[in-house]
Length: 372
Image 1 (cartoon, rainbow, N blue to C red):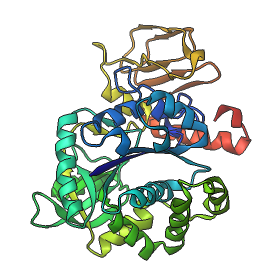
Image 2 (cartoon, rainbow, N blue to C red; image 1 turned 180 degrees about the horizontal axis):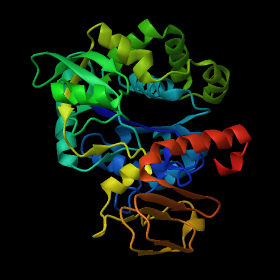
Image 3 (cartoon, rainbow, N blue to C red; image 1 turned 90 degrees about the vertical axis):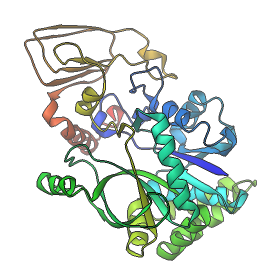
Image 4 (cartoon, helix red, strand yellow; image 1 turned 120 degrees about the vertical axis):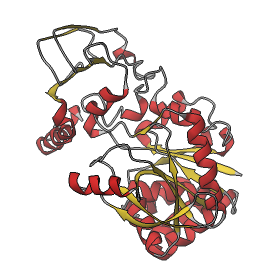
């Protein structure tokens, strides 16, 4: 039986001021449809995992919004983290809870804030990854690169395993400089690391115990208490002390060095919607390359109900995200990002979209928590 886990955390700092800590990007409709990124992620897993076998791991601040956006998900399948402890704790918690209920389960973890255009191709790739997981490998789905992207990590593809097109992962490579990324793409030996994982829960937990024994022990004790009256007490006692580390650093890189990680290539229109420039590349443009992101809005936030208006004259390749309800007008400009919200206005060149995160860091340093 296949279990799907959707980690739904983070605040999407490169999409500020649209994405905030209280209303992160996975709750927004950024897919070109009325569906939020979370709803789209849940929808493409239908037919692979039943609602009873689907879990969302999220924070206290987002649990109610997740429940409203996914009414078909059983309430008990929303696993609520008291505080963020990074992806290894979040995914490990889900694995430990699932293992208590089904020790031989195959589980997949799929971030709530990614975009997939070709759902049938995604599901076909996932089936191939499940085959590798059933053979005892910790699987990661790699994306066939279309250009030398510096914003993604890479997987160095190793030897075939003999199961379909499953290959070992020879190395995890961090986000490269442009010349290195070009070399990766030209070699044909590298895939983008999409952060999509598939494994048997017993194999993953054994590897977690080998590399992160304290984290494993804490999650084991929390999972034991999960369906009891002691859950909140044990969570409060143990969760704050859990090792804060990503699943890539905490488990996958070490497992890869031990020859335990496999990958399959995927080509299904994947994107992590990391910044506004990327969003402008993904959505439909007018004849001048302009994009107006007409969002369906946060389902649980009626304050954004007013339909905005955008007026552009002699503008090219401008990305506008109108969220204040007032007119946004642009004349004679090009390659800009304009994000207008009720309490913050962002204007920057599309080439500096990645630097929006630096603004968020500055706001944190200033103590402007109300804008985060």
